[in-house]
Image 1 (cartoon, helix red, strand yellow):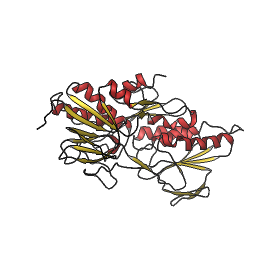
Image 2 (cartoon, rainbow, N blue to C red; image 1 turned 30 degrees about the vertical axis):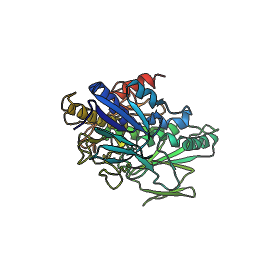
Image 3 (spheres, rainbow, N blue to C red; image 1 turned 30 degrees about the horizontal axis):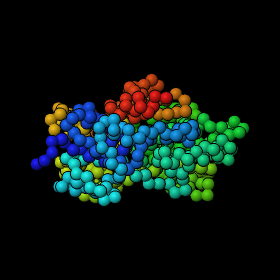
Length: 377
Protein backbone atom coordinates (compact mmCIF):
# COMPACT_ATOMS: atom_id res chain seq x y z
CA UNK A 1 0.00 0.00 0.00
CA UNK A 2 1.30 3.44 -0.94
CA UNK A 3 1.82 5.88 1.93
CA UNK A 4 1.55 8.97 -0.23
CA UNK A 5 -1.43 10.62 -1.92
CA UNK A 6 -0.03 11.58 -5.30
CA UNK A 7 0.87 8.89 -7.82
CA UNK A 8 4.58 9.02 -8.62
CA UNK A 9 5.53 8.47 -12.26
CA UNK A 10 9.19 8.20 -13.20
CA UNK A 11 9.96 8.72 -16.89
CA UNK A 12 13.43 7.59 -17.94
CA UNK A 13 14.56 9.40 -21.08
CA UNK A 14 14.62 12.81 -22.72
CA UNK A 15 13.43 12.16 -26.27
CA UNK A 16 10.12 12.08 -28.09
CA UNK A 17 8.58 9.17 -26.16
CA UNK A 18 9.60 10.59 -22.79
CA UNK A 19 8.28 14.08 -23.44
CA UNK A 20 5.06 12.86 -25.08
CA UNK A 21 4.41 10.73 -21.97
CA UNK A 22 4.96 13.73 -19.72
CA UNK A 23 2.66 16.01 -21.72
CA UNK A 24 -0.01 13.34 -22.11
CA UNK A 25 -0.08 12.69 -18.36
CA UNK A 26 -0.35 16.38 -17.63
CA UNK A 27 -3.27 16.59 -20.06
CA UNK A 28 -5.15 13.59 -18.61
CA UNK A 29 -4.12 13.35 -14.94
CA UNK A 30 -2.90 16.79 -13.92
CA UNK A 31 -2.96 17.14 -10.14
CA UNK A 32 -3.01 13.38 -9.62
CA UNK A 33 0.54 12.57 -10.70
CA UNK A 34 3.98 13.63 -9.52
CA UNK A 35 6.32 13.32 -12.50
CA UNK A 36 10.09 12.90 -12.40
CA UNK A 37 12.06 12.99 -15.63
CA UNK A 38 15.39 11.13 -15.52
CA UNK A 39 17.28 12.36 -18.59
CA UNK A 40 20.91 11.77 -19.62
CA UNK A 41 21.20 15.00 -21.64
CA UNK A 42 20.25 18.57 -20.67
CA UNK A 43 18.48 19.31 -23.97
CA UNK A 44 15.82 17.78 -26.17
CA UNK A 45 17.18 17.68 -29.73
CA UNK A 46 14.91 17.57 -32.76
CA UNK A 47 16.75 14.62 -34.28
CA UNK A 48 14.76 14.22 -37.54
CA UNK A 49 16.27 17.46 -38.85
CA UNK A 50 19.82 16.14 -38.41
CA UNK A 51 19.77 15.10 -42.08
CA UNK A 52 19.82 18.74 -43.23
CA UNK A 53 22.47 19.96 -40.79
CA UNK A 54 25.44 18.83 -42.97
CA UNK A 55 24.04 20.97 -45.79
CA UNK A 56 22.60 24.04 -44.05
CA UNK A 57 25.13 24.16 -41.16
CA UNK A 58 22.54 25.77 -38.88
CA UNK A 59 22.48 23.13 -36.17
CA UNK A 60 19.56 21.00 -35.07
CA UNK A 61 16.84 22.80 -33.05
CA UNK A 62 16.97 21.98 -29.36
CA UNK A 63 15.13 22.85 -26.18
CA UNK A 64 16.43 22.84 -22.58
CA UNK A 65 14.67 20.08 -20.69
CA UNK A 66 14.80 22.19 -17.53
CA UNK A 67 12.47 24.72 -19.17
CA UNK A 68 10.00 22.09 -20.33
CA UNK A 69 10.04 20.29 -16.98
CA UNK A 70 9.49 23.51 -15.03
CA UNK A 71 6.69 24.58 -17.36
CA UNK A 72 4.86 21.30 -16.75
CA UNK A 73 5.57 20.88 -13.05
CA UNK A 74 7.96 17.96 -13.41
CA UNK A 75 11.14 17.29 -11.48
CA UNK A 76 14.21 16.91 -13.69
CA UNK A 77 17.04 14.60 -12.62
CA UNK A 78 20.23 14.30 -14.66
CA UNK A 79 21.17 10.69 -15.29
CA UNK A 80 20.54 7.52 -17.26
CA UNK A 81 18.61 4.46 -16.15
CA UNK A 82 20.83 1.43 -15.46
CA UNK A 83 18.73 -1.02 -13.45
CA UNK A 84 15.30 -1.59 -11.97
CA UNK A 85 14.09 -3.46 -8.89
CA UNK A 86 10.46 -3.94 -9.93
CA UNK A 87 9.41 -5.58 -6.66
CA UNK A 88 10.65 -2.63 -4.58
CA UNK A 89 9.68 -0.17 -7.33
CA UNK A 90 13.11 1.40 -7.35
CA UNK A 91 15.01 2.59 -10.41
CA UNK A 92 18.80 2.89 -10.26
CA UNK A 93 20.71 5.42 -12.33
CA UNK A 94 24.18 4.78 -13.70
CA UNK A 95 25.70 6.95 -10.98
CA UNK A 96 24.06 4.76 -8.32
CA UNK A 97 21.25 7.16 -7.42
CA UNK A 98 17.99 5.42 -6.50
CA UNK A 99 14.58 6.78 -7.43
CA UNK A 100 11.34 5.26 -6.17
CA UNK A 101 8.18 5.21 -8.28
CA UNK A 102 4.62 3.95 -8.46
CA UNK A 103 4.82 3.56 -12.24
CA UNK A 104 7.98 3.60 -14.34
CA UNK A 105 8.01 4.54 -18.03
CA UNK A 106 11.22 3.61 -19.86
CA UNK A 107 11.81 5.82 -22.88
CA UNK A 108 15.58 5.46 -22.89
CA UNK A 109 15.97 5.05 -26.64
CA UNK A 110 18.55 2.83 -28.32
CA UNK A 111 22.27 2.88 -29.05
CA UNK A 112 23.57 2.97 -32.64
CA UNK A 113 26.14 0.39 -33.73
CA UNK A 114 28.17 0.83 -36.95
CA UNK A 115 27.66 -2.02 -39.41
CA UNK A 116 29.60 -1.21 -42.60
CA UNK A 117 33.33 -1.17 -41.94
CA UNK A 118 35.07 1.78 -43.57
CA UNK A 119 31.90 3.84 -43.97
CA UNK A 120 30.83 7.06 -42.27
CA UNK A 121 27.98 6.07 -39.97
CA UNK A 122 25.04 8.46 -39.76
CA UNK A 123 22.97 8.00 -36.61
CA UNK A 124 21.86 11.57 -35.98
CA UNK A 125 23.19 14.99 -34.94
CA UNK A 126 26.39 13.53 -33.50
CA UNK A 127 27.44 12.47 -37.00
CA UNK A 128 26.51 15.66 -38.85
CA UNK A 129 30.09 16.96 -38.90
CA UNK A 130 31.40 13.77 -40.51
CA UNK A 131 28.75 13.94 -43.23
CA UNK A 132 29.42 17.67 -43.66
CA UNK A 133 33.05 16.81 -44.48
CA UNK A 134 31.78 14.62 -47.35
CA UNK A 135 29.52 17.45 -48.53
CA UNK A 136 32.50 19.81 -48.48
CA UNK A 137 34.42 17.28 -50.56
CA UNK A 138 31.61 17.24 -53.12
CA UNK A 139 31.50 21.02 -53.26
CA UNK A 140 35.28 21.20 -53.71
CA UNK A 141 35.33 18.51 -56.41
CA UNK A 142 37.37 16.06 -54.32
CA UNK A 143 34.45 13.66 -53.84
CA UNK A 144 32.74 12.60 -57.05
CA UNK A 145 31.01 9.32 -56.23
CA UNK A 146 29.15 8.71 -52.95
CA UNK A 147 27.46 5.52 -51.80
CA UNK A 148 24.62 5.54 -49.28
CA UNK A 149 23.96 2.23 -47.55
CA UNK A 150 21.06 0.78 -45.56
CA UNK A 151 22.34 -2.54 -44.16
CA UNK A 152 20.21 -5.54 -43.30
CA UNK A 153 18.51 -5.22 -39.92
CA UNK A 154 17.74 -1.49 -40.36
CA UNK A 155 13.97 -1.31 -41.05
CA UNK A 156 13.65 2.51 -40.78
CA UNK A 157 15.69 3.78 -43.72
CA UNK A 158 14.05 7.12 -44.50
CA UNK A 159 17.01 9.29 -43.30
CA UNK A 160 19.26 7.65 -45.89
CA UNK A 161 16.91 8.61 -48.73
CA UNK A 162 16.80 12.16 -47.40
CA UNK A 163 20.59 12.35 -47.36
CA UNK A 164 20.75 11.05 -50.92
CA UNK A 165 18.15 13.53 -52.16
CA UNK A 166 19.85 16.43 -50.37
CA UNK A 167 23.23 15.39 -51.84
CA UNK A 168 21.77 15.32 -55.33
CA UNK A 169 21.40 19.12 -55.18
CA UNK A 170 25.11 19.67 -54.52
CA UNK A 171 27.49 20.78 -57.27
CA UNK A 172 31.26 20.83 -57.72
CA UNK A 173 33.15 23.94 -58.95
CA UNK A 174 32.34 22.94 -62.57
CA UNK A 175 28.63 22.75 -61.78
CA UNK A 176 28.50 18.94 -61.93
CA UNK A 177 26.43 16.90 -59.46
CA UNK A 178 27.93 13.96 -57.57
CA UNK A 179 27.35 10.40 -58.77
CA UNK A 180 25.19 8.77 -56.11
CA UNK A 181 24.35 5.12 -55.53
CA UNK A 182 21.90 4.07 -52.82
CA UNK A 183 22.33 0.43 -51.81
CA UNK A 184 19.69 -0.97 -49.48
CA UNK A 185 18.92 -4.41 -48.10
CA UNK A 186 15.21 -3.64 -48.62
CA UNK A 187 13.37 -5.41 -51.41
CA UNK A 188 11.77 -2.07 -52.27
CA UNK A 189 12.76 1.49 -51.30
CA UNK A 190 11.10 2.72 -48.11
CA UNK A 191 9.59 -0.73 -47.74
CA UNK A 192 8.36 -0.06 -44.18
CA UNK A 193 5.84 2.45 -45.50
CA UNK A 194 4.25 0.53 -48.35
CA UNK A 195 3.92 0.41 -52.15
CA UNK A 196 2.86 4.01 -52.76
CA UNK A 197 5.83 5.31 -50.78
CA UNK A 198 8.15 2.88 -52.56
CA UNK A 199 6.94 4.07 -55.96
CA UNK A 200 7.32 7.70 -54.90
CA UNK A 201 10.87 7.05 -53.70
CA UNK A 202 11.80 5.31 -56.95
CA UNK A 203 10.44 8.23 -58.95
CA UNK A 204 12.33 10.80 -56.88
CA UNK A 205 15.62 8.91 -57.02
CA UNK A 206 15.31 8.38 -60.76
CA UNK A 207 14.51 12.04 -61.38
CA UNK A 208 17.62 13.05 -59.43
CA UNK A 209 19.88 10.56 -61.23
CA UNK A 210 20.49 8.46 -58.10
CA UNK A 211 21.29 4.83 -58.81
CA UNK A 212 19.17 2.50 -56.68
CA UNK A 213 20.27 -1.01 -55.73
CA UNK A 214 17.74 -2.98 -53.70
CA UNK A 215 18.20 -6.35 -51.95
CA UNK A 216 21.89 -5.50 -51.61
CA UNK A 217 24.03 -6.89 -48.81
CA UNK A 218 26.94 -4.50 -48.33
CA UNK A 219 29.96 -6.07 -46.67
CA UNK A 220 32.52 -3.27 -46.27
CA UNK A 221 34.35 -0.36 -47.87
CA UNK A 222 38.02 -1.01 -48.60
CA UNK A 223 40.48 1.17 -50.53
CA UNK A 224 37.76 3.14 -52.26
CA UNK A 225 35.65 0.10 -53.19
CA UNK A 226 32.19 -0.69 -51.79
CA UNK A 227 31.85 -4.46 -51.68
CA UNK A 228 28.36 -5.86 -52.19
CA UNK A 229 27.69 -9.55 -51.67
CA UNK A 230 27.07 -11.41 -54.97
CA UNK A 231 27.42 -8.16 -56.92
CA UNK A 232 31.09 -7.29 -56.55
CA UNK A 233 32.80 -3.96 -56.02
CA UNK A 234 31.66 -0.39 -56.71
CA UNK A 235 34.25 2.38 -56.79
CA UNK A 236 33.39 5.22 -54.42
CA UNK A 237 35.05 8.27 -52.91
CA UNK A 238 32.90 8.21 -49.78
CA UNK A 239 30.25 6.05 -48.15
CA UNK A 240 27.51 6.95 -45.67
CA UNK A 241 25.77 4.08 -43.86
CA UNK A 242 22.98 3.77 -41.35
CA UNK A 243 23.69 1.90 -38.10
CA UNK A 244 21.82 -0.94 -36.47
CA UNK A 245 20.34 -0.26 -33.06
CA UNK A 246 20.91 -1.95 -29.72
CA UNK A 247 18.50 -1.66 -26.81
CA UNK A 248 19.24 -0.07 -23.44
CA UNK A 249 19.72 -3.46 -21.68
CA UNK A 250 18.20 -2.43 -18.33
CA UNK A 251 19.32 -4.78 -15.55
CA UNK A 252 16.47 -6.41 -13.63
CA UNK A 253 14.03 -6.43 -16.56
CA UNK A 254 13.38 -8.92 -19.37
CA UNK A 255 15.08 -8.15 -22.67
CA UNK A 256 15.71 -9.75 -26.03
CA UNK A 257 19.09 -10.70 -27.46
CA UNK A 258 19.82 -7.10 -28.45
CA UNK A 259 18.76 -5.52 -25.17
CA UNK A 260 15.28 -4.34 -26.20
CA UNK A 261 12.34 -4.55 -23.80
CA UNK A 262 9.46 -6.87 -24.74
CA UNK A 263 6.13 -5.09 -24.26
CA UNK A 264 2.47 -5.87 -24.82
CA UNK A 265 0.17 -3.82 -27.07
CA UNK A 266 -0.29 -1.27 -24.27
CA UNK A 267 3.41 -0.76 -23.56
CA UNK A 268 3.61 -2.80 -20.37
CA UNK A 269 6.93 -4.60 -20.02
CA UNK A 270 6.37 -8.34 -20.07
CA UNK A 271 5.62 -9.70 -16.60
CA UNK A 272 5.90 -6.31 -14.85
CA UNK A 273 2.68 -4.64 -13.72
CA UNK A 274 4.12 -1.19 -13.01
CA UNK A 275 6.84 -0.89 -15.65
CA UNK A 276 6.07 0.45 -19.12
CA UNK A 277 8.22 1.27 -22.13
CA UNK A 278 7.75 3.40 -25.23
CA UNK A 279 9.86 4.32 -28.22
CA UNK A 280 13.12 2.85 -29.44
CA UNK A 281 13.77 0.94 -26.20
CA UNK A 282 10.92 -1.44 -27.06
CA UNK A 283 11.31 -4.68 -28.99
CA UNK A 284 9.24 -3.36 -31.91
CA UNK A 285 10.86 -3.76 -35.31
CA UNK A 286 10.13 -0.20 -36.43
CA UNK A 287 11.80 2.66 -34.56
CA UNK A 288 10.28 6.00 -35.56
CA UNK A 289 9.41 9.20 -33.70
CA UNK A 290 5.72 9.31 -34.56
CA UNK A 291 5.23 5.69 -33.54
CA UNK A 292 7.14 6.37 -30.31
CA UNK A 293 4.73 9.21 -29.53
CA UNK A 294 1.71 6.96 -30.11
CA UNK A 295 3.19 4.33 -27.81
CA UNK A 296 3.74 7.03 -25.19
CA UNK A 297 0.11 8.17 -25.49
CA UNK A 298 -1.07 4.59 -24.91
CA UNK A 299 1.16 4.22 -21.85
CA UNK A 300 -0.04 7.53 -20.41
CA UNK A 301 -3.66 6.49 -20.99
CA UNK A 302 -3.08 3.20 -19.15
CA UNK A 303 -1.55 4.98 -16.16
CA UNK A 304 -4.32 7.58 -16.10
CA UNK A 305 -6.99 4.88 -16.19
CA UNK A 306 -5.30 2.94 -13.39
CA UNK A 307 -5.50 5.94 -11.06
CA UNK A 308 -9.06 6.84 -12.05
CA UNK A 309 -8.23 9.76 -14.32
CA UNK A 310 -9.45 8.42 -17.64
CA UNK A 311 -11.27 5.67 -19.51
CA UNK A 312 -9.78 2.29 -20.29
CA UNK A 313 -7.76 2.71 -23.50
CA UNK A 314 -8.88 0.76 -26.53
CA UNK A 315 -6.63 -1.43 -28.63
CA UNK A 316 -3.92 0.75 -30.22
CA UNK A 317 -4.07 1.29 -33.98
CA UNK A 318 -0.65 2.81 -34.80
CA UNK A 319 -0.12 4.86 -37.95
CA UNK A 320 3.21 5.76 -39.50
CA UNK A 321 3.35 9.47 -40.32
CA UNK A 322 6.53 11.06 -41.60
CA UNK A 323 7.83 13.78 -43.87
CA UNK A 324 10.34 12.91 -46.59
CA UNK A 325 12.73 15.83 -46.99
CA UNK A 326 13.83 16.03 -50.62
CA UNK A 327 15.90 19.19 -50.83
CA UNK A 328 12.87 20.62 -52.62
CA UNK A 329 9.18 20.18 -51.90
CA UNK A 330 8.66 17.71 -49.07
CA UNK A 331 6.41 14.67 -49.34
CA UNK A 332 4.07 13.53 -46.58
CA UNK A 333 3.87 9.78 -46.07
CA UNK A 334 1.25 7.95 -44.03
CA UNK A 335 0.63 4.24 -43.50
CA UNK A 336 -1.51 2.31 -41.01
CA UNK A 337 0.57 -0.29 -39.20
CA UNK A 338 -0.47 -3.84 -38.38
CA UNK A 339 -0.78 -4.85 -34.73
CA UNK A 340 2.64 -5.06 -33.11
CA UNK A 341 4.07 -2.32 -35.32
CA UNK A 342 5.52 -4.74 -37.84
CA UNK A 343 3.93 -4.19 -41.26
CA UNK A 344 1.90 -1.65 -43.21
CA UNK A 345 -1.61 -2.24 -44.55
CA UNK A 346 -1.85 0.59 -47.09
CA UNK A 347 -0.09 3.89 -47.50
CA UNK A 348 -0.59 7.40 -48.82
CA UNK A 349 1.78 9.97 -50.34
CA UNK A 350 1.01 13.68 -50.71
CA UNK A 351 2.77 16.99 -51.26
CA UNK A 352 0.28 18.74 -48.98
CA UNK A 353 0.18 18.11 -45.24
CA UNK A 354 -1.74 15.01 -44.14
CA UNK A 355 -1.72 16.04 -40.43
CA UNK A 356 -1.37 19.17 -38.34
CA UNK A 357 0.97 20.62 -37.39
CA UNK A 358 2.86 19.29 -40.44
CA UNK A 359 6.05 18.47 -38.54
CA UNK A 360 8.51 15.59 -38.88
CA UNK A 361 7.42 14.20 -35.51
CA UNK A 362 3.66 13.73 -35.62
CA UNK A 363 2.72 13.63 -31.93
CA UNK A 364 -0.61 14.50 -30.34
CA UNK A 365 0.84 16.64 -27.55
CA UNK A 366 4.51 17.15 -28.35
CA UNK A 367 3.88 18.12 -31.98
CA UNK A 368 1.89 21.29 -31.24
CA UNK A 369 4.15 22.12 -28.30
CA UNK A 370 7.32 21.98 -30.40
CA UNK A 371 5.66 23.82 -33.28
CA UNK A 372 5.07 26.70 -30.87
CA UNK A 373 8.27 26.57 -28.84
CA UNK A 374 10.92 25.20 -31.20
CA UNK A 375 9.93 25.33 -34.86
CA UNK A 376 8.26 28.71 -35.24
CA UNK A 377 11.03 29.96 -37.53
